[in-house]
Length: 261
Length: 107
Image (tube, rainbow over all chains, first blue to last red):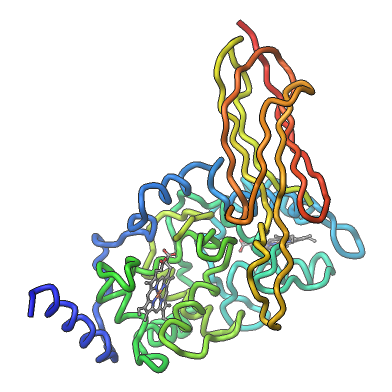
């Protein structure tokens, strides 16, 4: 057997063994954005706003920000004014604790709350273009700013649950998120780099989707990849996973809108 | 709903070769895919894109199903006079949409 062949065998066996409760986190100094693993052309596409297709949604979000909605014709801008000032840094500290539901809420959920409660407008469906556009527009105001998870201790049990979920074997393949993203992030899977699963560029344009998509869509893809039943959009567990991912990425710069293969 | 990003220099010297870059939000559905209900998804692509410079056509392209969604198109032209650079594209639904950029040409 060649050395290459043996290495592949060992990798597969280790991957299939699953169950890594307590797997070590990626070392802080070794943390790298998913963008670092991309081909130079894809990185260039993200870096140039004129060629980053995610900017189409940011532009649409800017339009929606100023568009009146609901019976009193209030726009987001009516209350929040200039997003460049009022929404700066907001996305970097989500998910945040929501007093109303006594649970963490993600940025898209927070925006939809404002839409329903403060504009009196009908809800925006998860993964709909208008909600993605508004979320991308708000998150874009934090581009370049460090991820800053809130210190709110009420979030701790939810974040801890997210960490537990991250380390729990899933699906018919019995693989945990941590098997791939903490232990084998420098490896490849079917030719694609595995990467460290940082949530810093969402919503982002994935070339495979030919569209902008949320972090939840990406997480559902990974769940389907290990042949697990993907959690439904908006599921509390998806927000708990996001809390853990944001904590893992604390201090890394926001990139919204990112581009990924 | 028009969603397009047109990128052209705001100023140029007479005779300068400039680059126009456009990114247009469009599904570019090929017509070859089958939907979840087993029925083919009808083709819906941009067929033709035309760029005019102060009313005169300077660039045109026919597009085909192999283009990605949200196509990115870049081309160059010679700046001659201040005016409007207008892009117009027509899709399978027969809708024509436009986006423009203004350029100031001065020596």
